[in-house]
Length: 152
Length: 152
Image (cartoon, rainbow over all chains, first blue to last red; front, side, top):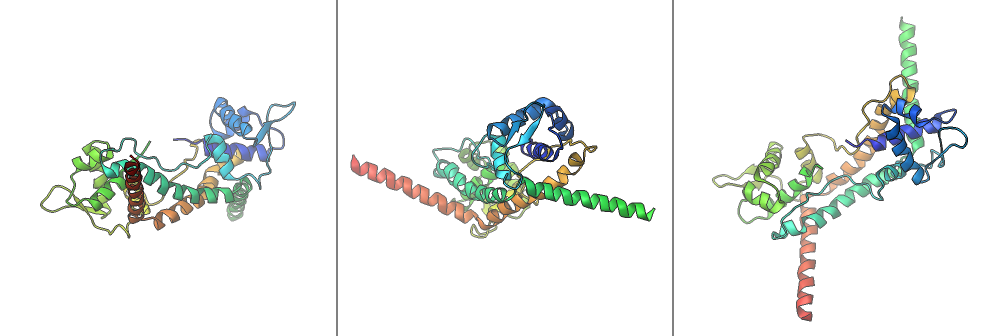
């Protein structure tokens, strides 16, 4: 299971929200992984110009405002790819069969149509949208706890 | 790499196009895998009422016309799921951190939005669409060969 994409969004929310730069160790503690994994992810985000190392202190800062940073950009950075890839093709169809010979280019084409729809939605969804969704969940939790506290 | 989905579409094109019922062995030969893998896939397709075993002979027939059989239905059958799943979530975010505590439900929600767009396209794409795309590629190949033959 590849969770680089979700780990990267988690890291970017922390980097964006933290009052002072967070180190790989601090990000890893929140993500629930080790610092070397986070360094690999942040290395990929740096390479695409999404974050940079903070000067003078250990940590990172965002180079693209959260409202301009799409999930599509984040996905492409941490998968080192241009396109979103969803479905794998079987590897060894039989070239001697007419269906076997044409199945891979045919399905590549059909799958690309589906992937493009996913990409469109990913381009329309920003890091800011994720942060706002999270904020509303945090508020719900706080309100839930308040009303629970009031009931006691 | 899970290629059950693309293998299933390949098998369904064969089942739909073959002049007489094809056995698991024959399908496996075209898909480039073994018959037990194909039996697993066809078992899933049978369970969802997409195909049935042909009576009297060894082989399968389609229960849903190709123009009514969406890629969404095929995907759900061979993944034994209701929803299309694209992105995995990291497993162990830290509950003691407010971002760590809310990241999984937040990203589940955002990812679902993307997956729904992919699902929409998969509902709009049928087995017939795949067969037509393949047919046009076969024609192109034949025309290419013809014009090449004429040049010789």
